[in-house]
Length: 336
Image (tube, rainbow, N blue to C red; front, side, top):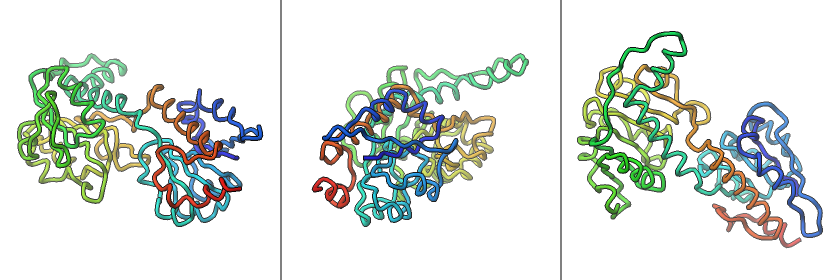
């Protein structure tokens, strides 16, 4: 079995320090070692470049910046599986993969603590202008004594009470914040938070965290009407998906003062990074999609792909497969 890893050198070092030797140590049932092929370029691959580089490979282990386009599934007849080394598969054409008989699988949700902690970090920076003072000092300036605000005693609002939302609620409650939650699919949030309607959450929250899944229904969830309902001067923190925000409406709210501060780890720029329109604003604190980029999470996600390749070598459908019923190429491979 030949496995192609799409990560560029920087991402390969960040994710696969431990996992790459593990992947190379795998063997077929007859003792033949699994062959690992690496991205030959110093950057992320386009689909035509991916097709050329992965020719003859049975498995693609794809960084989140590598799309799974229909053209790739059709042009790579040997491809059995496309393994996303991340949970988000929104840039993978699962329908096209299924039509071609290619298995699609995702990584485990090991990013939850890292992403929730970054959300808290963005909130702290928005509240205390830590980055702005640091930049002043590094530029040889004496920072002004910028007035911040204490988070204890304030109210946080979480829209979407999934894995990250529920973990973040505990962190926010732990520093003394009242936590409001709105999620139409959740009936109980325990003692750590209060389940409320969206209008109440927006009216009362000093900091709002949109953590809904990115779907056609939630695109531009944070629009002009949403922002107008928020408490004047409140903070908005987005570590979920860039599509949730209408960037122009958010920019207008920052300019008017309706939005007091903005923290972003995601956006509509390449690789889900914050768009410059918002990232350069003086009341915005932005990071380049770092939510899950910790050694603990990166290693866990990389090792999850090793686990999946190990399963296929053993003749098993890997865990976290999203279309196992249509993975006809893999099943034919098992029958050989």
